[in-house]
Structure formats: structure tokens, C-alpha cells
Image 1 (spheres, one colour):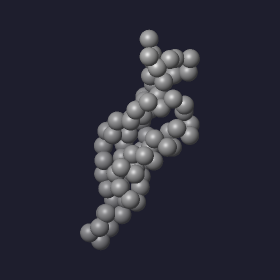
Image 2 (image 1 turned 45 degrees about the vertical axis):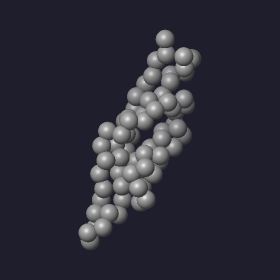
Image 3 (image 1 turned 90 degrees about the vertical axis):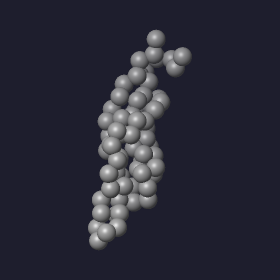
Image 4 (image 1 turned 135 degrees about the vertical axis):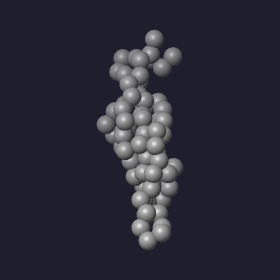
Length: 71
């Protein structure tokens, strides 16, 4: 049986929510191995002068624990 661990991360982008989600996965992958999925829990944006200046996500990143097989 495979066992996954879930961490919660916050990520930001000045381009889009999609890019913020990718940043969450990229940054999590720099610290943990075997990332398998990402669940976007919340999305919000910072606004200045009536324009969105940054996109933010609160993401749950799941990864396979060491010595586990994805099967």
C-alpha cells in the first residue's frame, strides 16, 4: 500500500492563478521528492488602483513517502 504525505504551501505569481499553482509545485519539488498531486484550496489576488497585481494560491501538495511504490 502506498502512503502519501500532504503539505500546505502558499505561492504567488504576477501572471496568473495557473502560474501561482505551478510555482507551488515547483517550490515544493525543490524540498520534497515524488510530488504526485496538488489541490488548490484557496485563490485570492492583491489589487492596487483597481488592477490585480498578484495572484495567490493556498495549495495542498501530496507526495509519495520514501520507500513506497506508486502502485
